[in-house]
Image (cartoon, rainbow, N blue to C red; front, side, top):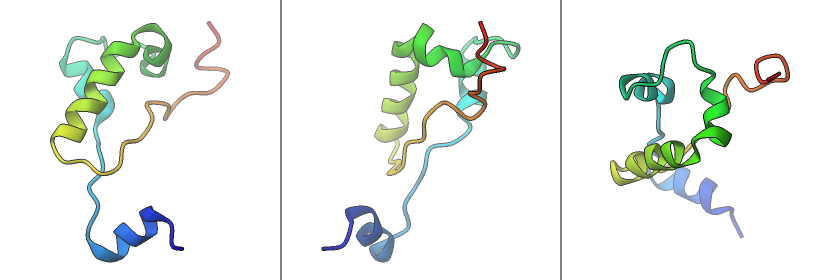
Length: 75
C-alpha cells in the first residue's frame, strides 16, 4: 500500500505553508525575537498560524523550527 503522501503527490499539486516568520513579524513579533522559541513560549500563536494556513488550503504544514539549534535556543 502506498503512503498517503506519495499517493496525493501523484494525483495533484500539494500546497505548503510559507513565510511563517514574516507572518509572525507582521503580527507584532519583533524581528529580533527567537521565532523558534515561540513553539514553547506561545504555542497558541503557533497553533493559530498553522490553523490559518490549513483553512487557506495548505496540504503541508511545516514546523516552526528552521533555526532551532543549541546555540540559538541556549537560553
